[in-house]
Structure formats: C-alpha cells, structure tokens
Image (cartoon, rainbow, N blue to C red; front, side, top):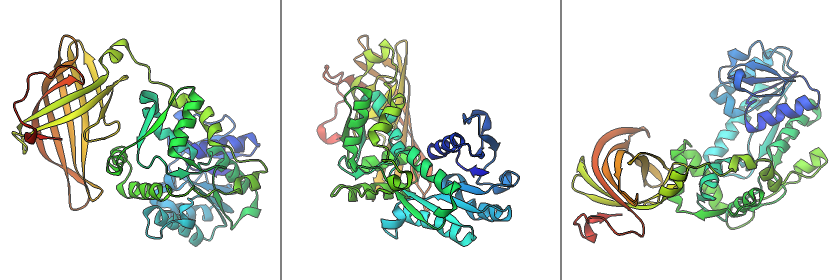
Length: 425
C-alpha cells in the first residue's frame, strides 16, 4: 500500500493516476474528499498532512509514503516519526533542484535543505526527487493569456527546462514501488531549455493564436507576485534565479529518460494537453464596447495627500479585468458596468529596496459614464497599508478622492487646472 500526500496537486494527482493505472493499491490523502476528483481505483481518505494525527489510521499497513512538503508544512518531522512508528518502509520526497546548485543563503535552498535534513534524520529510507521548473508553473499565466494573449513579467529571456508533472509522477511511482532507488537523489528536468518568451509562444502555438511575453520592470514584477500571495522571500529567490538564467541556457538532465526508458515529455506536449486552461475569457458585447485605455486623473480630497493630483493609465480589458499601466503593474484590478454606472477597483504597491512598504487599494463605486462611454467621473476611497516592524502590513490611512477619466485618444475632459509640476506620475 502506498500513501500519497498532496494528492490533489499537480504532481500528486498525476502520481495517483500512474499508481492506479499500474494496479498499485494507493491511499490518496486530501482535506476535501468530496471535491478531490481522483480515480475510482484510489482509496480517498480525509486528512491533513500538516496535522499528522489525522493520518494515524491511514498510515497503518502503508509500505511507502510520498511526501509533498507543501502539504506537510512545519509538521514534517512529526509526520515522519508517525510513519516510522506505523512501519512505513521508505519515503519519496518532492524536493527541488536548487539544493544542488543554488546559493546556500537562498530562501528556497534553505527550505529544501530543511526538508531533506528532516527526512534523513528520521531514519527512514528515502529517495529525493529534485525537479527544476515545473511545466505546470505556466498555469500562473493562464489569466493573462486568456484575457490579453500576452504575459507581463520580468526577464523575458530567462531560461529553464520545464519538467512535465507526469514525468515527475512516473519517477515517483518507480521509486515508491522499487526499493533499489533508496538513498538516491534525482534531478529532474525537461529535455530542452526554453526562455519565458519561447514558452509563451509555444502555448500560443498550441492555442492556434498569437501570444507573446511583455517584459516589465523587475520591481513591478515583484509587486505583482507578492500581490498574488507569494511570500516576498520566495519572490526574491524566483527573480534572482530568473536573472541568473538570462546569460546562459538552463541546465538539462537525461535522468527522466534514463529511469523511464523513454524521452522526457516536452513543454509543447504539456501545452497541447492544457489548452483549456488558457482559453480566451468569454466576454459580453458591453465588455468589448467599453474596453480600452483610459487616462485617469485623481484629486485627493481628504487624507494625507489632500490637494495632490496623480495621473494613472488604466487598461479596461474584456472580461472585467483591469490593468494599471502607470505605474506598470500586471493585472491588479477588476471592473463592472450596471446601466450608466462604472464600479472598479485596483491596487498599487510601493517598493523600498525591493520590499513592499505601502499598498494602496482603490475602490470606486458608481462612477458616472459619459453618453458615449469615452469618459467617466466619480469618487473613490483608498485604503493605505504601511509596512510594520515585523514585516506585516497594517491600515495606516484612508484617502477620499475625486476621479475623472477619458479614453485615450479622445478629447481631454475639463482640465484640473494644475501644471505639469503638479501632476505626479
């Protein structure tokens, strides 16, 4: 019997598929069995690997354990101790290639080293899988490609050799079922190094439409990634690796082919299998009619910046998405229209030494649209969050503002009466 943690993740779900297809008895652990959508041949068990006690019964009679550290969190040593107590004979661990060639002071390197050290110290026989860039990481581009046909990010020419999650799963299944892989570490990559620009173009080829990568400043990319929930130290590491991979192609290995007896799957094959994730966003006629770039003038009426004026460029995209162009920031916002009223919101992040120190969330309710929908005006509230000594963000001020905007290329509405020196951009 094999137990899989992280069973609904990209690698975990593929691993369950492989094991079930090979006729192996498998326990798939998930926090939400009702929505897991796992193969009928798997024994789906409710449990939380970050709370090992919830797996106490499931681990009985388990021969091998697949560990995804993202599912176990800080509870990994406790889970390993419980597995050893229950008689588990070996563990296969999803680690990362950064362990072998990364900076020892890097956050990701240290994270994976802690994982591997905990496994080694447990006394359980182990196999470490060290994949590089996952092909499935490209799913993070799905929203932008679906809405824009392009991706905003830093380092367009940064390369990696993305490995297909099915190849990781196939190697994991081999190590889980064959004890001869005990004590070995495998660096897993795809067969070819590709730049970010090339990967976006390959996705476009799979979709049958043009897609491209638009490079933006590193600070803007950093802010975008933090705004989407990535911890700042992880973002720092990711961008550092991307920068280092611009000068030369990313390394590749032949480990997948050597272990599986077939060529590693290509990124193009992954893209063809995942076209549904990048499908264009369905939009209404109204979405299409209103979409466009608007020049937005903001006058501060109340709050710390009272009397100041700022100008922003807002790109209203079909499908209710909003792109803040000045300062450049990918995908931070949304909008909707009801009758002649426009509601929208977006946020800005101010960086200091690469760290977010101020975040401003803007909410505009019921701005009045002009008859031709080439302009709008209304009020908004801005919540300002400032960085604290412990690294967190806390609400420090509110701004009341008046806003006027016109579609780029149309006549400017009534001027605000400030000279160029009074406009902040």
